[in-house]
Amino acid sequence: MSAPNVDKPNEGIVGQVVNSAKNAANYVSESIQGNSAEASKEANKQQAKGNVPGNDSITDRVSGALGAAGDKVDEKKHDSAAKANKEAI
Image (cartoon, rainbow, N blue to C red; front, side):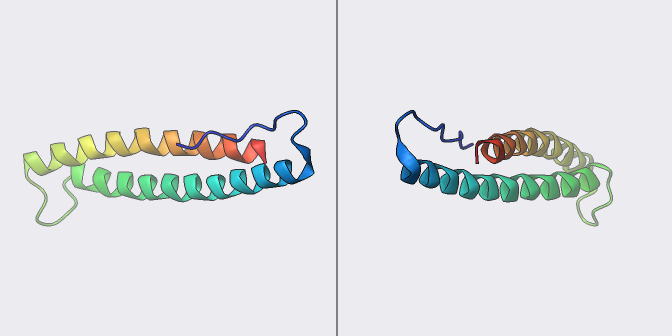
């Protein structure tokens, strides 16, 4: 999770531009990671429902449910970081 670069007083135009560029790059990175976590969450939800051929035992379904829960936490974390970086641009 990348924290936004906060503009410092007296840092000048160049420093502000550099910080904005870093924040933009961090926003894109966090957005991609959040989307990846969302896709993984959805796949794990299908596994938890028993909709994945070959992965429909109770153990596989529990594993899918736990994976979906972890992915949801990651998704929220990356979405929050992306939002913070976007607001700091």
